[in-house]
Length: 267
Image (cartoon, rainbow, N blue to C red; front, side):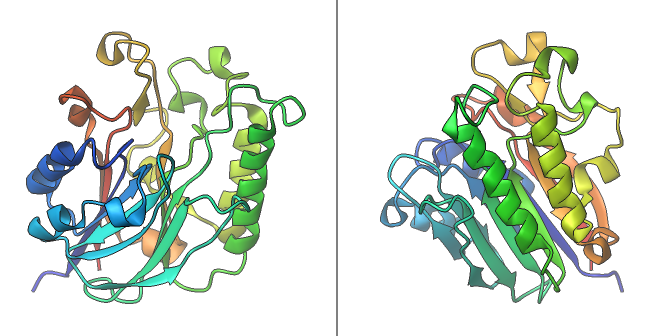
């Protein structure tokens, strides 16, 4: 008898109401057990809940706000709300945590949208950059106390490795790849011994992008960055068997600037 499996997808959708047709297509074609969305950009009462229920994803946990941010976790298997952390310390809707109750029972799934950080990598000139670093620091303190198998997924808005961007030297002073961001993210990773599943299954320096700006023709110039991540507690990471990037979704009509990532676990 084969071991039960669990598949979890994460996608910064950049407006769930605008891109519900793309989400429906992705769910129909890939059928992950759980989908974590970031930047849903809507209040909770405007979330297209019925569309997900019709697709078989009847278990939903979300936190939203008008026009910005917001995260949602939708699932074919039962779950319960577990936590809502305000790591931004200003009430923005950037995190929802759930506990799985079906396959993977007991697993904690944390869905997070880390701030982009503005354009200038200087907290004195650009308060948004300081807020991003402080957000990560709060997450680091939280990570130190984790005691249960946990999967942390979402748009981290940082490409940590030299090979996680199309041009390392050109982007060293560009927010998302600056040394201070990479160092701060490394402190978060060390706080719980998080395993980066993207690089477990697609080892550096293999190409592994998840985001391309709308400002450039994404496929022709391939100026990508790996901003979306899945990190697992060490024991859980040992059960991951496959990690894929649904890059083809970037070719769809009216795409998000991010593409989904999917990890499969043998439980």
